[in-house]
Image (tube, rainbow, N blue to C red):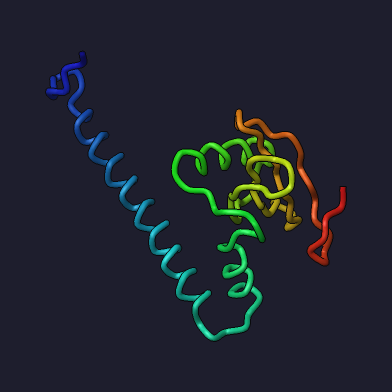
Length: 136
C-alpha cells in the first residue's frame, strides 16, 4: 500500500491529486449543465431542428425500452468502439432481432444503428438514409 503522506521527494503529490479531483468536478458540472440546458431546450416551444431532434432521441422506438445502468454503459462502450468519433443518441432494447441497439450520429452527421448482442459484441451497423429509413 502506498503512503500518501507528502515527503521531500514528492511534495506536489497531494496538490496533483487535488487538482485532478477539481478537474473531474468541473467536467461533471459541465456535463450536468449541458444536460439541463438540452432538457430545457427540448421542452421549450421552439420548433428548431435541435429541439425536435433532442426530444425524439430521448424516447425508445416502438416495442423497445431505453437502457440504464451497467447494461447501458456496456452497450455505449461497444458502440463507441465500433464507431469512433460518433455520438450516442440513445441505447435501448431492440425489437428486431438483437438484444440491444445504440442509435448514433457519426462525426460526418450520418445516423447509424449499432446492433449489440448479449455478450456486448457489435453484430451489425445499419446506416440510415436522409429520410429516416435504413440503407444496408
